[in-house]
Image (cartoon, rainbow, N blue to C red; front, side):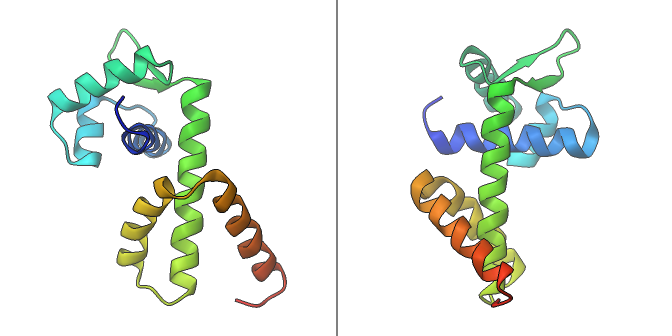
Amino acid sequence: MKQRKTVEDYLKAVYLLQKQNGSVRGADIAAELHVSRPTVSVSLKELEKEGYLFLDSAREVHLTDKGKTVARETYERHQTFRSLLEDLGVDGKTAAEDACQMEHAVSPKSYEALRKWTNRKKASGCE
């Protein structure tokens, strides 16, 4: 796939849809990401080649261990940024939208430092 953001968005969508619905099809992903079904089809083929997911005989999408790891990490980053922004007084809709951008833009090193700082603040009761 072309961009890390695209890979992460697709994997996170599959991960969340599996948690919600138990099974995931291309049409579900298209609706979640607001893209066309043909776009999803092409992207799923690329993600399958890269070892992130596979489609079974019923055309349901399943994440591989590699795909689950990336999806979980992306979702965790999203939740951390969303929570931080909401704690700072940003409304939920804006916080969610901004977290979608931030989850891809921040380096792992900076994210980890921010995550640790946020956890220390919460543990000390200074929110």
